[in-house]
Image (cartoon, rainbow, N blue to C red):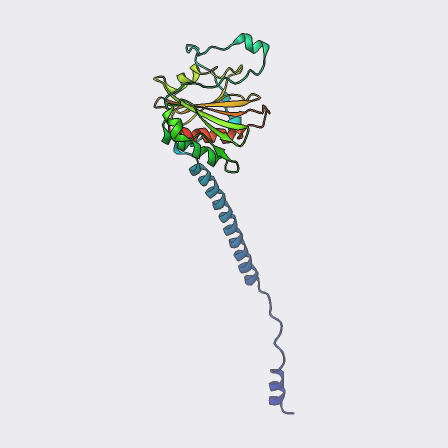
Length: 248
């Protein structure tokens, strides 16, 4: 066999296995690092989007309202006299008195009550919300509006107006619900004061004092009297109050 034939036959064999070069390994490593960084960045952006969405979901005047579990107890100014004053004798005899309900306030219009009922339904979307006929109720010049939730629960709304600053108005209402311990308080960036009173066996109250002098009084009730079985959780109660206070 000629040398040319031997060389031609050698060229017909299978190609040798590919060789992994250092440059190839480094390139693949750089690609993996880039993909990992992109995933981390995407996750971070998703978290930020959720947080932003949560902020936007709050009414504009309530941005910055924290979970009420972190609110501090109110410490009123010494020169402000509470109205009504604390019932010291009752507090010595009973640790958690019954909730004193609001009975007075400004006259409420049909449109106002309709908005409050819709906001309550949004807050407890998984439960049935009802109220009296709004048109007939408006003819009775109501000052307190009650929304029923299911068979045993309800939320009551009333509104007032004050010439005092929100903090002063909140101090005056310190013992308005008959409580024996100061309510928890949060002051928003726009000056709105949220004042949450401790729950009793039958209910809980939230007062919201706006910078323009308007004030909301809201109470959630359970006629069955089961502590801890109120219509909504505290944070939901505060959120509902913030939404209602927007449309006083």
